Length: 241
Ligand code: ADP
Ligand code: UDP
Image (cartoon, rainbow, N blue to C red; front, side, top):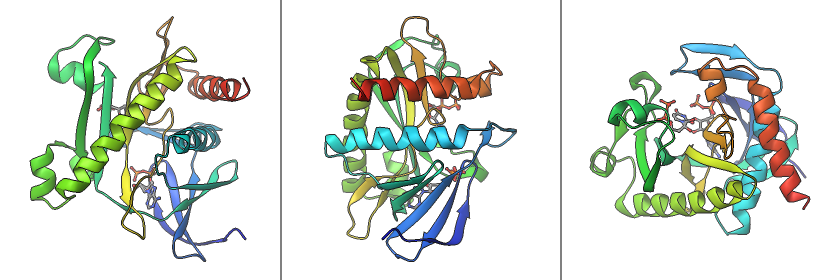
C-alpha cells in the first residue's frame, strides 16, 4: 500500500518534501515556481512542476537500468513522487561537458566550447552563502563527506554523465552541464536524490543549439514550459521506439 503524506518537512524553491506513515519514505511534490540567481528572479510557470516530476522519474528509471541507485520509488501523481528518505550531503555536484553559465565568465571561455574531459565541481549547498564552489579538502575539513564518500559520489556522477550524455545524444540533444545531489539511505548506501530535469540540466538541440532548459527563464528567452515539453516528448518517443 502506498503510504499517505503526513507533515510538510521542508519547502524549497522548486519542491516540497513531506513525511509519510513509513519512516523510510518521503513524498516530494514539484511546484510550478521558477527561481533563478539564488531566488532573486521569480515566476510561476504553469505545468513546470508536472513536467519536471515526469522527466526526472523517467531519467532515474533509465539510470536504474545501469544499476545506479536513486531515491525513486514510485510516481504517485502528475506532480508527486514517493522517494526513499535520504540523509542528504550538503553538496551540489556539477558536471560540465560544454562551457555555459558561470564557468564562461569565471574562466573566460566561449559558450558552447566542448571540454576535453568532463569537469566535476562541488558546491557547498548553502543558500545564504550562494552555494559557493569548494574542493575536496574543504569537504573533508568541514566534515561534509568522507574520502570514501567523495570517491563514491564522484564515480557515480561520472557514470551518470556517461549514461545520460549518450542517452540524450541519441535523441539529438547535447547534455551541456547538470547538477546532482546525493544522500545516504537507512543502510548507509549512497543514492542519487533530488531531481534531474531541465531545471537542473542544460540541454541544447545538437543541430540548432536551441536552449531547452531553465536558461530560457534565466535569460528571458520565452517558451520555457514549451522547451521542457520538447525534452519530455523526446524521452517518451525514444522509450516507444
Ligand atoms: P532547494 O532546497 O534548493 O530550494 P528544492 O525546492 O528542490 O530545492 O527542495 C528539495 C529539497 O529536498 C532539497 O533540499 C533536497 O536536497 C532535498 N531532497 C531531495 N531528495 C531528497 C530525499 N530523497 N530525501 C531527503 N531530502 C531530499
Ligand atoms: N545548477 C542547479 N542548481 C544550482 C546551481 C546550478 O541546478 O543551484 C545547474 C544549472 O542548471 C546548470 C549546472 O548546474 O545546469 C551548472 O550551473 P552553473 O554553475 O553554470 O550555474 P549558473 O550560475 O549558470 O546558474
